[in-house]
Length: 141
Image (cartoon, rainbow, N blue to C red):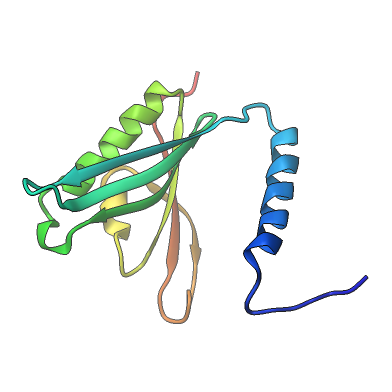
């Protein structure tokens, strides 16, 4: 066996790891469909001024990105994006939502919208924190 360390991995080598891990993971879980979910906000000129990117998988919504143009923050655009994504996730059968944010981003925003912090990475990467949140979207049966 030969171990190779690099700070410049080839995409094809990374794809081998990713594809094999996905194949294994999918063989172990009951719901295999991961479905993308994105909502974009455009201004009158058609410029993108905000959006959310997520995936639904089984009974979970996993939010990866939420952004609103800095000049438009405080106008409930982010809240609407998040609520609309959660509503669509519920239609898809999701009961929970998961996301993470940095301490310099939107921690209080998510708390205000019902997210509960479940884990924090301290000193990430050095002076910030990375907060992980979950929210129950529907009542458990």
